[in-house]
Every structure is written in C-alpha cells, then in structure tokens.
Amino acid sequence: MSWQPRFHNLRHPRKRPRVKEPRLLFHASRWGSLPDIFLGLAILKLGTEERLAVGPARTRYRAKRLEAVELYRRRFSRVPKLMEYSMRQLPRLGQ
Image 1: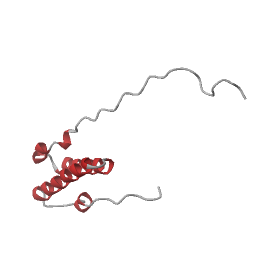
Image 2: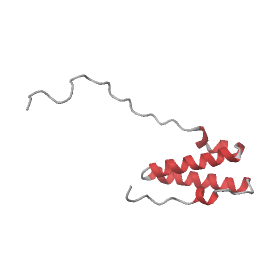
Image 3: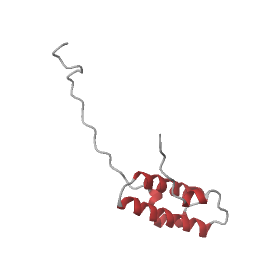
Image 4: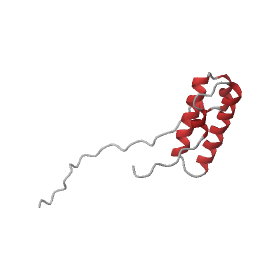
C-alpha cells in the first residue's frame, strides 16, 4: 500500500452558497392579473417549495399556496386539476 493519498492534491474552488431569489410567481400582488396557466404554475411551484421546506417556512409556503388556490377558485369557473393543487402530497416511502 502506498503512502500517497488516493486522490490528487489539486485544490478545487469552493462552491458558492446558493442564493434563493424570490420567484416572480410567488408575489401575491401579481396573482390577480395572472392568467390561469401561470397562476396554476405558481401554485405548483409553491407546493414544491412547501415540500422542500422545513419548520415554519413550510407553514408559510402552505398558507401562501392555499391562498393562491382560493384566488384560483374565485377567478376561474373551470377547475382542471384543483384537487391536486389544494391537497398536500404524502411523503414517498421506500424510494
């Protein structure tokens, strides 16, 4: 067995921390003027952020998502996949 380390000794630059910029679809003030496709997209993205968040941040994303769902219900008469928007998905086990 050699005394040298297995990996080379080159120094790689550190990764910069990921800065999360607020998405334009997350601004509740814009939801009143968004078409149904973009409002649905905002609801889906809020759901994704809710699943990824932990603690109080998850509660904030959930409240915001449910507020967007209510606005969607009030503005548009047809509701294609609103049940999926308003229900919280269960965690996946075994994957």
